[in-house]
Length: 234
Image (cartoon, rainbow, N blue to C red):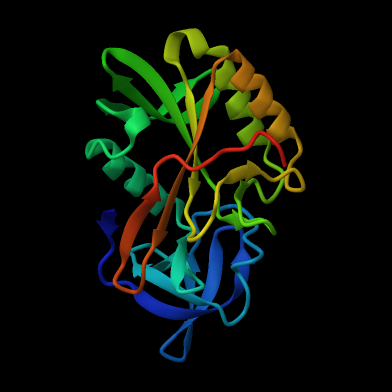
């Protein structure tokens, strides 16, 4: 299912990561720096010579944002802003069965000392939804998260577990890469995530994973599966 199209993307060749939020790419033979919204290590993608797609932006310092990285015949969507836009489109179109008849109430909802991506309303009940970018591919072809230690990710899951009765929280892993068979946590990145997931699940937090990817340079992002298998093991 086609979900969202990003028009005017620019093909580039990745040169390397400059810092946490910046990469260097080559466009038409010239080196250019681009904004990176994904704070994961992304070591399998951010390698010299990798084909990438960038969007033009009007930043004070940077004029491009890295959107997607070539992965086989398609592209992995590493940009977290785009992942959020896709999720919001799916929500509006009622394209996710387990979020049927839900609508967004608020973005960046503050609760328990943390900021959660969304407060949504489903058939009269309010629910918290936290997205996690999952663009790491494991050796056995699962999308995975996290690829590095994440104190914030652990805290957010722990906070959600405290509000099960009031908000029926959902953690959604955005498996934004082609050809994966499911999701599993990556214990080499941070073993605390698996423990936090198991504890939160036992208390009533729902964990789901959505598989999306970009088809080609046209910028079309498709929904491959709104509910891929999710493992509570590494």
